[in-house]
Length: 546
Image 1 (cartoon, rainbow, N blue to C red):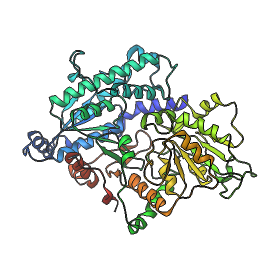
Image 2: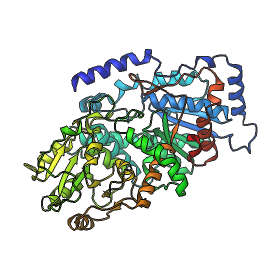
Image 3: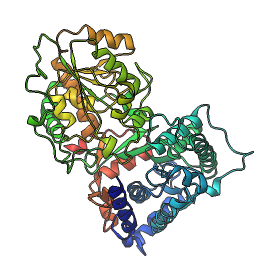
Image 4: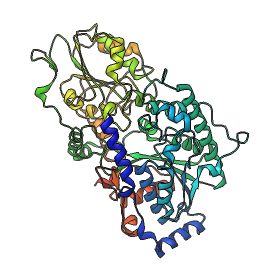
């Protein structure tokens, strides 16, 4: 881990001198741009829905990709006639999303807060935004005294403070961590301060719509909560899986809205026209060749002959009278508790341990494939599934095998050799079902309730379904079509391709370097996104893909 962290430190030090952030040099003295800003600020036509006061709440300028895309959104929205403000935290918060156990140890956070991070967070982002000539607001300017602070709705502060704590430590349970109680209190104070200050700002500047990346954690989750509390329109965004794509949601974080969304129904002819496109993309997901959020890109993948099973094993034989083979696919422990509501179990580990106990007393086989993001994610987990299993079980039953997070055998290779898949909340459920693999959902995943998975709502229901299974579950043609349609909706429609994002490999996932306002204005997908932000419409852009 140390060589990797040393390399990351070098990259962070060099990054300001690269093209990782847009320079916006062509805007300097640009007459057309000055006129566009003036028109937006004057709000010439008060009845025009596009003449809105828009707050782009970047807050954490240290996230280079988010602040860069926010600057592009600011330019595009201004060209549409919006009056755009940017918001940055200027070192006011005692803890935030930029705090990461890898970079800032607990004793450092307790001694000086995130101050060591603030210099590389606030100033570079402010410098970039100021080049646009649009208002850049500071969180501290809207902070209220403790007596005047606005109270958040019940539960909001604690929910986001706990999320911030778990993300900081990269664990699902912070009990026993150094300064756990004190750091949780830092996140609570940061959450309170954000909610109150943003509420004050929204009222003072008469903001009509808020754009926020992610929409969860501290401070972003509280920005969204403050806007929701006042009835201000909210748009959240984040990076899509597919390269050059952004995913947008109205009203709340896409982590909360997408599980509730339904793909638009298609007739059989439409499905047949798109099925090859979807299947081709899903096949490419294994290698990550077309994705910028991938856990296998640049990784040597095992060949099927390296499957960790004896030749005598009847692994994945559907007609085996001695039992079936189930594949269990985990989430990252801390991530699963933040992004998903509870369903049949209180958390992913409870589900995992109960599944092991269940299979210890069945004739079925179980292959546990740990999520690769445990070691390859942007915030590597400090709570590993294998370690948690080892605390509870001296050894696994002989009919249960585990493929760890850093194994070269991919989740997709394991899935191909299983009869039924078990998931808690991973989005892989969509891909598995679209490939014709039956999926049992025990948590609150994006696939739940869509008609192509077997969703259980209690432990008893889960045990009964698996214990009484004598043959593999069989997906109907309608179920597979529904899964393909939803996969198309999620991966190829809701993840909007923005052609101005240029993929990069080293310092950031993409760069943004348009040479003129026409390039921004003529980006059709970005134009549609801005129209949706300004009119409050949804972000379903099927026609973009042709």
